[in-house]
Length: 161
Image: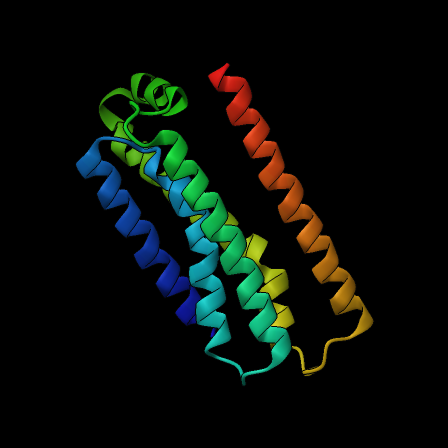
């Protein structure tokens, strides 16, 4: 299962790197950040028997990833490359694409995998019923998504004022 996750993640990262090269904009990986977790969750989900707990986990990861990707797409659409990446291009010079590939794209893929380990192992668990801890975790997730969404809205209002 880990092999299929890693292969899928590598394909995903390379797809976003190719898009970044074509658009001459490394910031597309910001959008790929949330979507990468969805890829990992889907690959994991289809490796284990269907259960309500796994379906809820997949739903939570998917909603969070789509919300983040949509927010970043909307925020960056039609704008020039994010100043951080533009600055990296200057610093890295002729090796910018290689440096970005290693330090932005592959590194974020590695982080996605490490950060995904809790839900990967959670989906592997034998328990198929929603326990008190699962329900509490769902409440924490709802609160976190709500706060994150609200914070992004306030940040957008602040930047536009």
